[in-house]
Image (cartoon, rainbow, N blue to C red):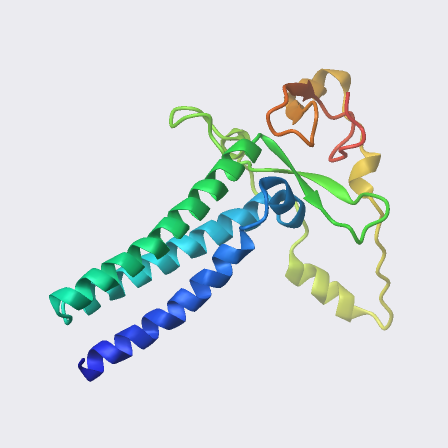
Length: 213
């Protein structure tokens, strides 16, 4: 076995070690995975698994070219075992992600006592290639916020400066009855069951999952 082949096998072993750790992360049941990770994290893990397997496959191709026929058969058998485990993990994650992809999602912040769960929207999502996203429907106007340079200049202009913050300011802004239909969203009737029916809600105030009707 040449030095180059030995080095490639060493690199492959390192990648396989990382892949094995990633595969162990997805061994628990779907319910346990959803309790430990959110959908975006599961999607990231799936991407890492696929990318790592692609790297290993590329090394396998290079290694096989340097081996004898007898060694090649052993390599193929071992490679197939890793590929099978990877495909099973990716299929499992893909199913979980697909079943969990609804219009609105919940962002869990366990360290917050008042609002530990907030709704998160993917505003770039489209029903199909011809349909607009929420971002496309926003009015494109110049920013109305104060310029940061002006704020910093005023902050340094006087001897003393005061900073204040309105707690949960968004929750204090109500929506007119006729405007609430534009804030409609879907939510699972039974959040613990991804296959349960969807119900339609709408906001009564700006950004508050507790103030919907």
